[in-house]
Amino acid sequence: MSADDTSTDETTSAATSSAGTIAAAASPATTTLTLADVVSLLDRRYPPATAEGWDAVGTVCGDPAQPVRRVLLAVDPTADVVDEAIEVGADLLVTHHPLLLRPVHSVAATTFKGALVHRLVRAGCALHVAHTNADAAADGVAEALAATLGLVDLEPLLPLPGESLDKHVVFVPLDATERVLDAMSDAGAGALGDYSRCAWTSTGTGTFVPGDSAAPAIGERGRVERVEEDRLEMIAPRARRAAVVAAMRGAHPYEEPAFDVLELAVLPATAGTGRVGRLDPPLPLREFAERVAQRLPATEQGVRVAGDLDGEVARVAVVGGSGDSLFDAVRRSGADAYVTADLRHHPASELRERAAFEAHAAGRDARDGRPFLVDVAHWASEWPWLESAARVLREDVAGRGATVDTQVSTRRTDPWTARIASAPLP
Image (cartoon, rainbow, N blue to C red):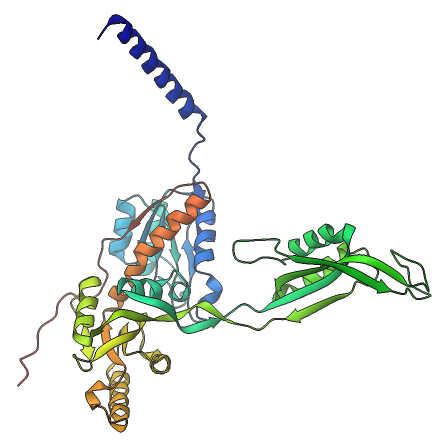
């Protein structure tokens, strides 16, 4: 290498280093969200209003103003998980199951639950719960379980009712359309998914005759008036009806605006309890149950099956957690198999007896009665959601121009520690 080459390289290197320093200095500092910010993102994914009435979801402890840089996600808020949250330096522990599901009168450290709250507070780690609201969500527990098992074409087993909406139609002189649109938008109209101020306008001619006691903004009493007007249409939640109409009247130049409020049909939502999907290709029950065992975390219970192991499974219903209260919905769904947890003897026995009776009445082998049952451990059925929740939280935080470290708990919180095999069947 020549001296000139060396000089050029050094100059280039120095320039590059200098440019790198300048670029680094110009880069904005990484934004850190507060607990209140992160909770608002969680609530948007898992709306508290969709939780069952008996549930206890939301923030259990934590300062809304505290920064959140690291989040640990777990199924259960056990002592072992709290240990892990403190060990990894989590600012927030998000669990599926509530710590305080039943009302308490004290969180004194002399009780085992109170002691956990005290430990979290001392460590500066907040606790937030997303339970049945996460079960029903589009990115929730049931959907994660269905995806883990390879189901496609998913739909809710029990859809939540969609939001009750109105369509507001108002006729506005052209020079006032934007003002009225903005006022209605500020009152809650025009929000569709991630979009706001959504509206439709078309132009036509309005006509009217002001009465003798009228105070017209346009025209004269007793004379026919024709005005170029926009037909403005916006959608709004029914609960915001009064506020939207009041905002429209306040911004409209006419003494008596012409408007309609139309109630729209309530359609099923994409969220809801459980999921039903299709196996592509279909599998024998034995192979499907083996897939369930392979793809869910290992537990002492393993996977229990009821039904003809050679029967074909094409349509599957899933519910994370306890699911024998939903047998009627599963039957209506036409599922060949039902994957859930905590199946009790009597409900499971009666379902299989009914399935056998109906299969026999239809001229099929009684063992082929549908649905077949695939019973897994409660914790295992809900664990797949943790990775999904961690991913969407990172995405949502990034959408706010910030970063957060998310970790999924490595602690198994299934309570069973051993299983003793029964004597061989005769």
